[in-house]
Image 1 (cartoon, rainbow, N blue to C red):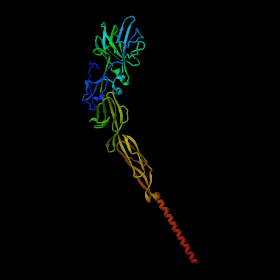
Image 2: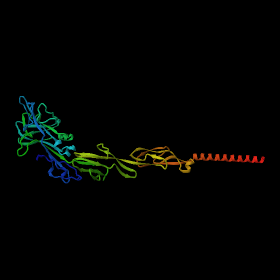
Image 3: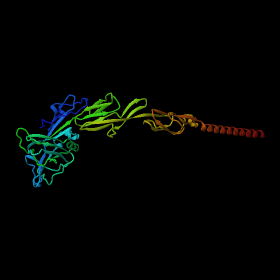
Length: 427
């Protein structure tokens, strides 16, 4: 049962992009209900949840080993009797076991959480100031809780208020304690304790063991969950982004916002955005240090993520001969290395057989020098072109050698002819 006196919230929600969703998304909510019973056309969905405690009991310093988990009331008092009498109340709410799975699984934190308790009896000699404190430990149960084994409470973070009337409800803000428990997916335990100025007072609150007549007066933890808003920030208008099975576009300012039901979503953004003429933008990461362009996010509460892209420039390394390296994309002002290997290549066909070679001579374009390696600072699209020359050195040697051999052969033939002529004349 959701307490009808739960205060309304003014959340200042941004204008949404409509996302597919209907009341079936929030079916079988158990302890929760959609505010006003319907999902608003423009979102966001607001869930109001009301939980009774799984355990509640009070402890008594004058009976330090006695358990009061079966009593219909929770007594909270600090009176100057002799000996002094002190009673503290403890309450535990099973958040993981009572709330919808999507709420629990997404670590959703409530926008507002209030502990409501019904005052059965209080004295009026002084205002009774009751503080509600967060109890870090959930390792207790009502049927064995005593003064001696009671868990400690956080004495710094608490909410306090004066109790002055019988037969009415009082509430304490426990948003911080409940949010912490939701983040850890654990129950939340609370302690109701008289504050330092509350002596000579005794307040009896109804426990979950109190008989129900027309309406329940059991303690109630009221929680308000507001459907999360995903806000994506980029530097690119009309960028297509996929969320789940739907594709959206950023607006003219490069922003995309959408209300989404609690849960996990696969979100993908372009890895590369082409700008033409050797220029592109390369995805480098999200504002939460995730570097994959496609990732899973869990939405429990509002989430803002910025996309980071960096400019890259293209280096083209070309050559009519041999193999080149270094062509590719580089981030702004990166130093690229263009190289060629080998620097000497035989000519094709007969010329190659005669020893004609192509020899690397120098670089042109955005590269300079006559070495096989050349560095380029990538502050824009670049190109490096290898220039070659023809080398006939070996060809000249080969031709000269052939001419010498031919000349020797001619001389030898002439000598043989002379010798032959002399022999014939002698005969």
